[in-house]
Image (tube, rainbow, N blue to C red; front, side, top):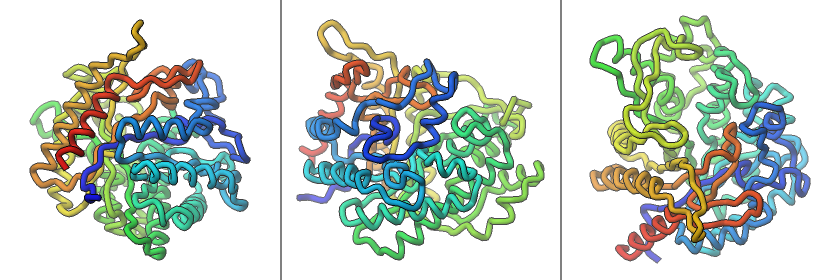
Length: 447
C-alpha cells in the first residue's frame, strides 16, 4: 500500500459523542457537574446520552468506513481510564478504547488520539483543577498509561485540545467550567497546561515509540487590524500574542510572547514569569491547527478581558455561520503559510475545520446542507493551495463526524457530516458527507 502523505478525515471528542458517562466504572468529569447546574448550558442540555457512541461504536465505525474516511481524530476520556483521576485503573475503560482503535485499524482508518479534550476528572477539579500544579503530574501519569498501552497501534498523539479555551473560557471569562474569572489564576492554568504537555513529551521521548508522533491542537486565527493606524496595528499584535502565540511560542520557541509578558507585568502577575525557565523549545513533532474564522480588532477600551488588552473586537464583515463566526477561508491559507515560514519543516495538520448551520431533514429524508459543502470546499481549496506551494500540511480533518453535544450550546448547533436525531439516535449522512466521500475517492484515485 502506498504511504499516505495527506489524510482527509474527521474529528470528534469523547464527551461530545459517547454518552454512557457512568458506564463500566467510569468516573465523573467536571463538565458533567457543570452541565448539571441550571443555566450553564443552553436548554439545560447535558452530555448524558449525546450520540450514544459508547454503545454504537461499531456501527459508527462502519459509517465512517462507508464515507472512506482516512483518519479519525478522537479523544479518550481521562475519567474512563482513571475514575478518581489517579490511582486505580479502570480496565473496562481501556478495553473500550482498545476496541475503538482496533476497529479503526481493521477498516484502514488512521487513529489520531487526543489525550485531553476538556474532560478533567471531577476529583482533580476538587483538588484545584488546572490551577493546582500537581494536576499536571497526574495528567502525565494518565498520558503515560495510554502511550504504553496503545503506542504500538496509534502513531499520532495530541496532548491538549485548545488549551487557550481551557484557560480563557474556563478561568478568565468563566463561561466554561470551572467558571472562574481571574486573570492571574488563568495565567497559572496556562502554564500548568504547558508544563503538563512537556511532562508528556519527556515520557514520549523515553518510550521511543516507533513511528510515534506527538503534537498539540491549538485554536488559531489570523488577527487583522481595523486600519493601518499604529494604535490599531499594536492592538492586533497584542491580540495575536494573546490568542495565537500564548501557546504556540512556548512549544516551538520555548518562550512566551513579549506582549503577553508585558501584560503580566502591568497586572502584577508574577507566576508565569517566574517559571519561564521551564519552557522547552521543540516539544512537538507536529502542530494541530483548529481553524474556524478570523478576528478583526481595533484599539479601544473594550470590556471584560478586552479591557486588559486595550482593544475591541469588530463584528464580521462577511457572511457568518450559525455560531456567528465570519466565513473567511483565506485565513486558513494565511495561517498555514505564516507558520510554515517560521517553521519550515514542521508537519501541520488541520485538526478541526467546520461550520454549524441550521440543518433539517427534508421530506425525502435528505439533509441538504449546501452551505456546509460550500464552506468545506472553500477551506479545503486553501489547504491544497498551501500544500502545492510547499507547506508541509499532512491532513485536513472536518469538525465534526457527527452532530453532537456542543458544550455550552448543548444540542442547538450542528457541525456534523452526519445528522443525529437525538430522540431516536438515527444517523443520516448529510449531503456534505456524501460530498466529502467523493473528495476522498477522487484523492485516492489520483494516488
